[in-house]
Image (cartoon, rainbow over all chains, first blue to last red; front, side, top):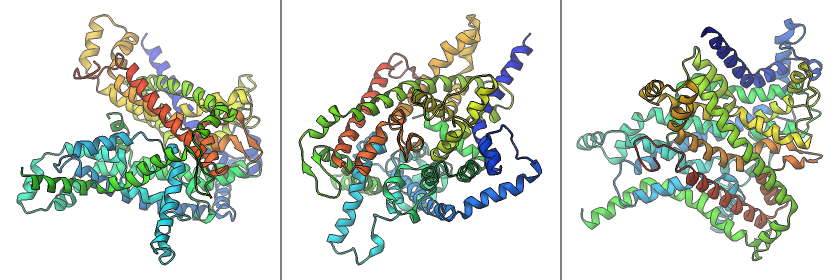
Length: 297
Length: 300
């Protein structure tokens, strides 16, 4: 009796999983077909004849990689630059602030922490327009005091800086996450280190940071994905095509919608998605822990 | 502690928090303050702002495009958020229970949440294609003639909700984690009282994970109110904007950076902020009796 509903349950599970994965499977399938077969929309997983799969795949992905109009390698490089600078800045500065909010005793700590929590919900669209003015104003201020144009490399607008600089000041959610982690570490640790002659910075740098590696990994991972996915930031601050990130570059194809063949569009999408999926497979444990901890706020 | 030592401690604490304090002042509070001011000015971005009183707000009131984006966004929030919660809880119950290969099913549902929105939009553009898209091909197999999902104005909202449901995996993982923390004796007690699995789910599981449901409701509402990238890519074509796919944040962006009306955009931004605060407050208020916090704390 019980075997029948059990079987039905597994049919259901397979159907649900398939529904969620199918869009990506279809993307891959389209990306390895020749243009005419992809555009026919025929429901086949592999190209016809199937023996040509690898050749066609290599050709499609090669075309995307070498496209002179939409320069994938350049956008990848820009994205990686922004991601590397943001992730390092975000992780480090959030850890510093979280330390100040958990393992240093001082009056006003509660107020600052409440302020951090309060800003967690401010949506980016609300500040995006004036943020543009602020960055432009910072350039103006540097011009007024003579830093610009003398030190041209300090200029913010028209560079990738607006995309990664704010990360160096920490992020409210990441500060919160790390602070919770630091609160859980026993206070005796600090005392022992202090008796051994460790300075406060030494306690942070040599003890707390190494101890909090799992939490730091969660912050770094999530921020990397955030940067990789971010579309609105680059849309507002990056106008020069030489500085496009992948998210912005991929959209160039859509601008030419109609003349971009579907197989190439899907190959480009797959190329943007795959690094994240690989990262997920490699770090699955960290991932699931991070997502689950979000719900514990 | 002496006053001097206390002052030193405060300085030390402030020093540790300096990165965030400076960053928030510069990149959060300053823009927010400026946007209040700009919302009362006429500010074409290339010229300095000129005080205009409440004209931006008055113009919004009379702007049919503004009301259209408000309506579209409200419908999207009203449908996608509850749909996401229901599907999320049901999927969590199915995938988080005692089934074989649980990790595999969970991974399948979670993977779409990793897909960069822009790439996801491209994939759905292909799937929802009226003639060649996979969705309509599959519907054709069962004899249904699918619509032009992303073109036909009546089907834009359903498409948006389906695409948002594809990203439900994040909530599913949160709900599963919460469900695994529900103590077994509660189910035991339910069984002794003669509850069938459906009643156990409704009377034990759902109340026990209600804090996570509330959290998820708030986060997904905030995100849905801001929806931008997907409709920007799918409904803003060189030959014009699909009116049914025009959303609040898109119009805000266009006002500021396409039409160069910074004051108008800031007025919109502030209204959006107020709506988000109001919705969040409303959900907290409405949930006082519905959400059960373990440990008998507030709200129980």
